[in-house]
Image 1 (cartoon, protein in one colour):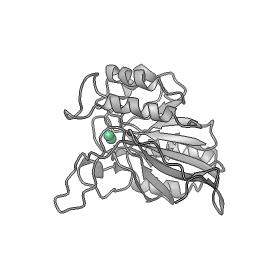
Image 2: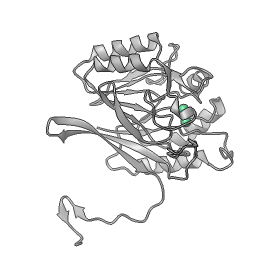
Image 3: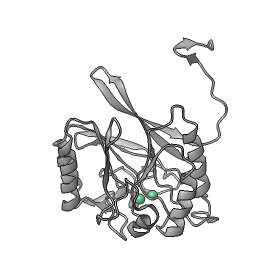
Image 4: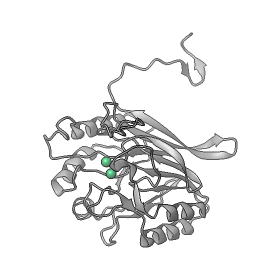
Length: 280
Ligand SMILES: [Fe+2]
Ligand SMILES: [Fe+2]
């Protein structure tokens, strides 16, 4: 199974440059182009939130116009920049976006790895939360299939990334409870998130937690005394999660890659099917 994770596309009104610099629609179009060239293509592309710079119907329609070019199926999750009602208006009724629940959470069952998409958004606030109701829903979903390898996804990383500013906050509450909950469900092979616009991994809840990169403007890592939150000019990127039958001596496992998006020189092939084609 191949899962592509895209995140934090921050699509704005057509023609608008975010922060006067970033053509986020163009970056998404380039990302779609790269994903469509993958061979084999992904089983699923999952967006871990902040679809728009500020949620609105025209911005989601602009996103949809570009994302419709994806040849792989797509599922979306809300982030703090998104608006649940506008999302429901544009994407509601698809199997992955419930229109009836207060929260936009759902489970994707049809792949080798089960994916539980949580809604960690507090409307109008930057940080997220996993309240009692959402934790109970997640606990129940995990309890339904304890033997199936599972990815738990939410927009806000429940861990502290070491970065400053709003991106350091992650979850306002429920992080400790989420950690304890995941420890009770050993089938969770990964917790994936977005929000911090940077690929970061750490241990959490007895599993591996990973925040995916952004397709728009990455945040730089600053560990200096001024604790700057910088938009860096690193390339946008996606994450590619591979479920491999022989990931480790113990058997199957999830391996996560970060793939920068850009126009690079042609690759130089060293091996083909394990055979050397270019001498060093
Ligand atoms: Fe974001
Ligand atoms: Fe966010």
